[in-house]
Image (cartoon, rainbow, N blue to C red; front, side, top):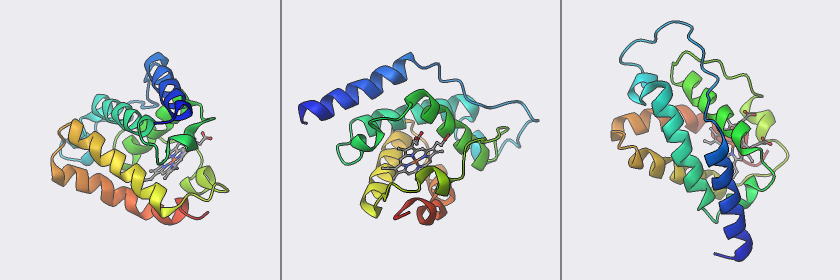
Length: 150
Ligand code: HEM
């Protein structure tokens, strides 16, 4: 790892450790017990998953540079509420659409796959069953067209 990349990873890790990890979840009623949100471990499970994902990204030389100027606590919270909301949890994702957020950066399919790899690693670390992993990946897969080569 080059010195610069190392610094970048350390910065992201520091921001992670300092940020509160509060998700934008608000109790809008209890989701059914067997939905994906519950299978991911609810609010706490998703917070832990996003934390592990960011740790993976911080160590991933293929994409870490893309997060050089990103406000990590905000990104963390955005990801938490996005995953919570698409998995059927009681959260509203209030950020911009995936297309707007990622437009103008020319993210490649190699970078997209790298992030998916990192997510799988994080889900493995959380010991989520493969069926649960696949359900989340299936929900995220369609975002490919909004994120890559925009
Ligand atoms: C499954 C694929 C992906 C999903 C579901 C996803 C989701 C998200 C979400 C929810 C946010 C936060 C938006 C907000 O709250 O404002 C975000 C921001 C961001 N994403 Fe992605 N993303 C994906 C792929 C990628 C890839 C492949 C890259 C680049 C390697 C990337 C780079 C970024 C960056 C740099 C930001 C921060 C933007 C900013 O705050 O300025 N994303 N993404």
